[in-house]
Image 1 (cartoon, helix red, strand yellow):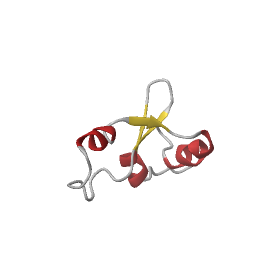
Image 2 (image 1 turned 90 degrees about the vertical axis):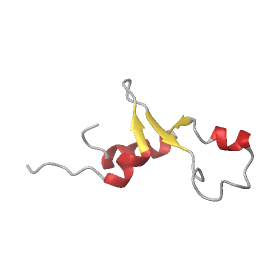
Image 3 (image 1 turned 180 degrees about the vertical axis):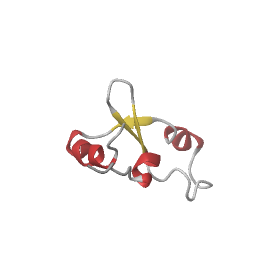
Image 4 (image 1 turned 45 degrees about the vertical axis):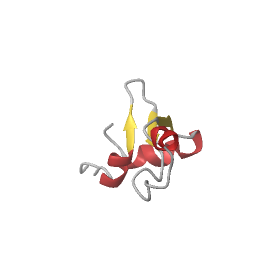
Length: 65
């Protein structure tokens, strides 16, 4: 069988932890930041676990992670 290709856009947006959880970053982090408060901009730095309903779809895009 041929090797499966990693979806590069998904690999840049999602991070898989050592225990297998898929972490995501929040949207709106880079665009129109001047009018957002410092507290809101700080909240964009946190990584959140991916919802369970999206897990199978993202796992298919990242086959070797």
